[in-house]
Image 1 (cartoon, helix red, strand yellow):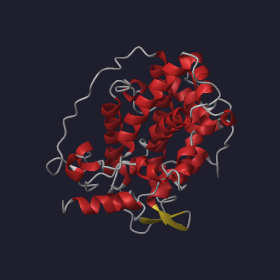
Image 2 (image 1 turned 60 degrees about the horizontal axis):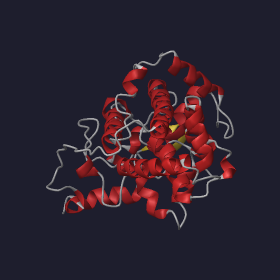
Image 3 (image 1 turned 120 degrees about the horizontal axis):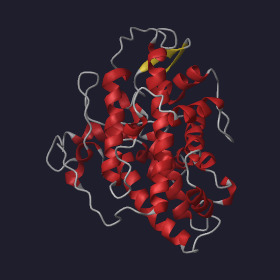
Image 4 (image 1 turned 90 degrees about the horizontal axis):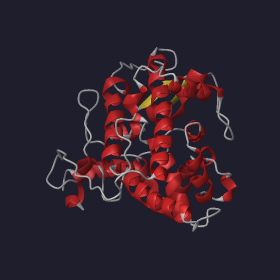
Length: 318
């Protein structure tokens, strides 16, 4: 158990924010462009009326809720702290890295199961106008966590997910985590903030690029695992994909006190951030569409083969 203490320390101090609030909202608005009409109808039944049936408006709720006394239990669901050493070595294992209090991988799996049950009830006419908060919360968590898991530093425990890695950006001292949460994409889009009630032009362009398959990774590869019957396996695959970026780019550059906005770092990171937010938007839509359509094997069990760094993983596997 001596190996567990550092991991728990990181989990307790990691920033709850993934992408910034407005970026999460834009991921939600991007997803709406790919939702089936039947999915939109179910969402309208499950969300509280204040959201007007929009997952874009609901996409950032989870961050605010995690900072309340009522919702503090969900604080650590927003990330998974890998016990690796980027840029020399990157790896992520569920039993090793997801603590007993949960992580973004387990949260996606759990909320997928809850949301699927809510969809069945909505189809049966048992849910209207967000009458069941557990169902509304499950949907809002899913939309948010499928965004969080694409942020590379939410799949990394190094330097407390980048929060303990000071850098300079546009002559301002900040943390590497904050740079990836929003500063890079603001630079790329030439904005200071994105609107919170509608899709921004930058993300309208993202939607077009998704449809035309213009990203440097084929769009089809983003959907290699989008089966709601295997939510733990899919979420783990997405987390590992994000974790790999911490070796491939996030920590692989030579910083030397340079300003990341002008040193070339932001220029190189821009396409990665655009790619990751696009993946999040499309996956949210495809995931929700699949659950609402319901033509997957709901009884299927997932067996994960991992290589934990100690027997049984965190907390003796509990």
